[in-house]
Image (cartoon, rainbow, N blue to C red; front, top):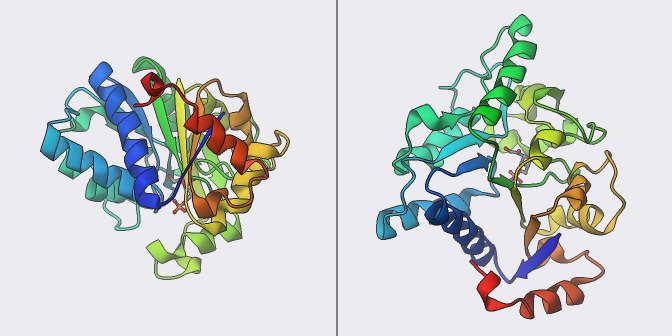
Length: 262
Ligand code: F6R
């Protein structure tokens, strides 16, 4: 794992966008795995700027989102479909046929088969080149809540009350946050060729420390990234504040050969 600590959220987000842009320039038909929530917003804004000002071309890029609330139609203002089009896709030259977001408007009996078909689509696209992740205060990635199998695939999950409360700002109240979601599994995420996890603020510091410096455990889903060959944690100072070996990570990053930087 590579741990990169930057002074501010803006610097972290710009660096994250540089990794994405570098990939797209090298591989115009790259497959991106995307997250929602507040964490990737500044990274997405930077991608939009790079598209507008430098012509970064998304026309051949394929995207797969991590998750969606079950019970919300795509037009619902709190759905992740709505979030992604509002904050990213409508500002880029993406081909809508190459945009994949799990469907939330499924009947109960459709869910299992649909989840399998989402995995098949990822395979058909050649697998995910770069997966962007946020992290929950309880260490979740995607909506893989604590105790999710480290081998899990796309499936239905039940949100914890903590996650529902954390996400209530996108709804009228915690009670209206759906209880069930569809999420890529931890096994699905680990198959991405490269992973960028971003985290900001002291509310994420404990989960970050447990994921990076604690044991690999299904109770801390992001700790599974210790098994990944190319996982980067991009952190602001506050999110890094509970890491015991902060100085070491900073030192390693400072020694990094310049040709390795995006
Ligand atoms: C969203 C997702 C979640 C969030 C996490 C952090 O697609 O997969 O794992 O990344 O809940 O949410 P924020 O960024 O709102 O703090």
